[in-house]
Image (cartoon, rainbow, N blue to C red; front, side):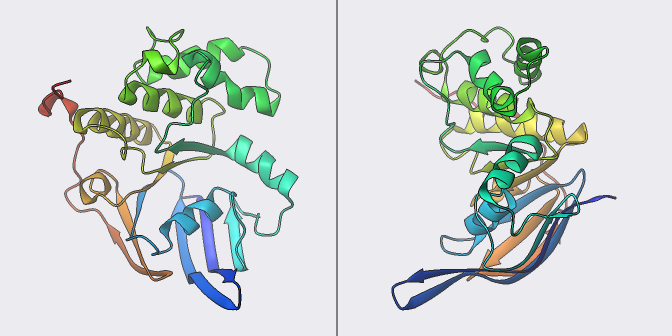
Length: 242
């Protein structure tokens, strides 16, 4: 299998006056192409810092981060922005959709930023159809449910065909049924070969993945395969009464 992400002795230190906070204290792990990984830990464990470095939103204080074999640890801001846009798809807890813009226009945004022109509308529509929103392409976020908004965000993460999709608490603002719908889409995407990493504090969400990295106090304390992986099934969840 191809190594997609390599963390080698990664440290991240934040200075608060004269005090130093070691958010990550020498972390090592590898994620290979086609994996579906959950990152878990309590608040302050280092899981969000690891995700930010993985997504090229932050740099390590020391150590080496390789993405598809390229050391991105010391890249300049402009270089990191290009890597983020071309190689990484993001899904956030709060959706991060433009409120006055239709679903299809939101999905087109990564292609606009990367300068992609050819078949942009067609590719955006295809991504929305892939997440079950082919009939909602012209709806604005306020015309969509929370689960539908998150599916738009998933379509947006897919449209540039990234090497990896990073999802930060993607079910955190969703009811149980909508969360199951999003997890089912993630499982289907992974079954199709897409690499995914999810930050979550919910064990039930992590059990839908194939591997769990557990963090505590800036350290990776456990790296375990998921046994008896749970299959997300929104049909078994009652719809909310609102």
